[in-house]
Length: 179
Image 1 (cartoon, rainbow, N blue to C red):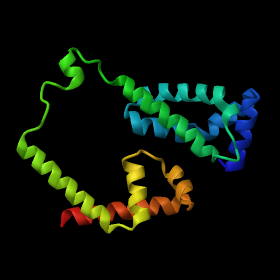
Image 2: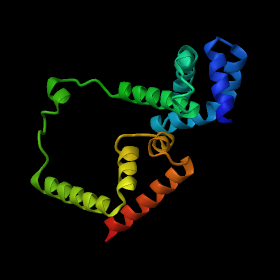
Image 3: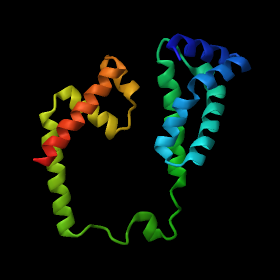
Image 4: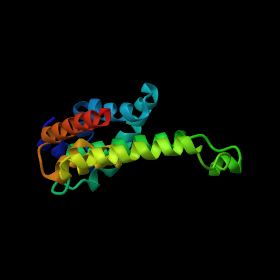
């Protein structure tokens, strides 16, 4: 769906136009479902989350500012944030205070600690081999959870260029880690 079409539909949805909402759903639901499914890894849960996402879109369409945000990014952020909320809610409640504070085993064994710190140093060294902007993009995508669209906007580059940056950076990291 074209950016202008999505933005127009969001404006109409903010005026409670049900036909615009149906058109918006038809044009964007597969992408938003994919986001929910990728995060939740459960089809039934993703379908339920998608319903909640569209309720939020209906309720918040008036908050969309076309001049500040790309409409697909705005919709994707709602879907991603809701799916993450569902994922967090899925976490089981701790049965005891020890479980809640992870007091049962406060520190890993020394061998595990040494191995993990060595791996961390190797990753840091490999990240330094990347160009600064590529390394920043990798951190923001895979540590901070930013979408490709958000990163493309932050770095002021086309979406496909951001995808290429990340793919090539991951290949370089893999190659570095295998040495």
